[in-house]
Amino acid sequence: MMKLFSRTPLATALLGYVLSAGAPALADDAVESERKALPLTELRMFADVFDRIKQAYVEPVDDRKLLEDAIRGMLTGLDPHSAYLEADAFESLQIHTRGEFGGLGIEVGLEDGFIRVIAPIDDTPAQRAGVRAGDLIIKLDDTPVQGLGLSEAVDMMRGEIGTPIRLTIMREGRDQPLELELKRDVIKVASVRHQVLEPGYGYLRISQFQSHTGQDLVAAINKMQQDGALKGLVLDLRNNPGGVLQAAVEVGNAFLKEGLIVYTEGRLPNSELRFNANENTAAPDTPLVVLINGGSASASEIVAGALQDQQRAVIMGTDSFGKGSVQTVLPLGEDRAIKLTTARYYTPGGRSIQAQGIQPDLRVEDARLTRIDGRERVKERDLAGHLENGSEAERSAAASSDLSSRDFQLYEALNLLKAMQILQRGSSVD
Image (cartoon, rainbow, N blue to C red):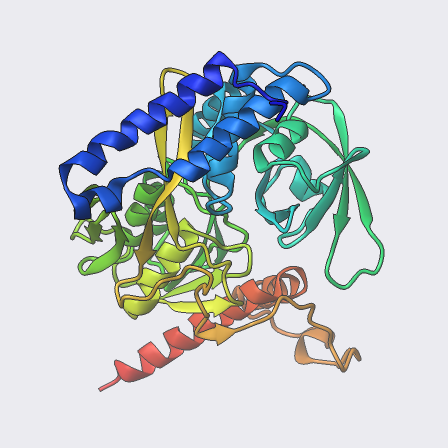
């Protein structure tokens, strides 16, 4: 029989290595060797496929590219979050963790061959163009996304600052694809924003969890407390894709003075960790409402789950994304790494969030408030010569009305905090 394919030296060396690697295991102990023995049939198949590509593919292929593609395929086949990080991707991940990177400002994942938007990052080209959590990206300019790896698609979305890119998106509720034009920009993310909604009621927005998020959050709380005692806080984690685990622990500790925040379990001993709160707490007793939605993932779910299980906050909004796994970045040499899922994380009550998410205590959909009775009625303040009240009640009512039209979920969170304050005042009366 004619032998159409003869092994290249590299393929022969690969097969020889895996055969010799499997031999000692077979010689030591029968039970142990059965557990540790490499799958020789599949490894021979890999060497044969490698050899056939080298000899028969329409164009010459570099050995290094084939092997890197094989590594990439091994990792992407595990789950949507494990990945091979080449030099650019590894550097980008490090920059992203520090809070500054280039691109469109979208946290994405791979789903059925397409790119699913987990969440757009605040004040980025994606957010300004109207990209939403849950959008399915099917084309980048004229290139279909299906068949591309996640890292390839991300590379295409990155580029020189100011250059345009067209995203073709499928969105729930629309029959036709939606095309959005964006311009790439340097993404500088301020992970924590804060403001006073009304006197005594503060608002904290975390767009993603970076290495300095915990410190920034405590600084924001302290700054608002300088203006007077806080009657309540809203912690907004909507469309927050997650980030650094330690930052999530620090944020949880800002509101908890004791107890478990999160624990992780994996196959390796060093992947089993427990994180507890301590007394170094910025706001241990201030009434708290946490806003979540389908774009709240990973570290956001750690914080929401901890505060919910410890009965420290009311969780409001819609079900979170459901990413309950921990990724560890393992360097390969100086400029490459793999991002590997190494553990699952659990809330203090032992709940796994993976593919389940955090369910809010109070379900409030994102909606627009419409008044049924729009007629203006004559009131005392409309009468000529009426006495002025001299309080801020009227300005506060106007601010609440504006908030209800801009952000209904936040409006409801503020109303709940006010109700909690009323009940607290009533319970303190002798």
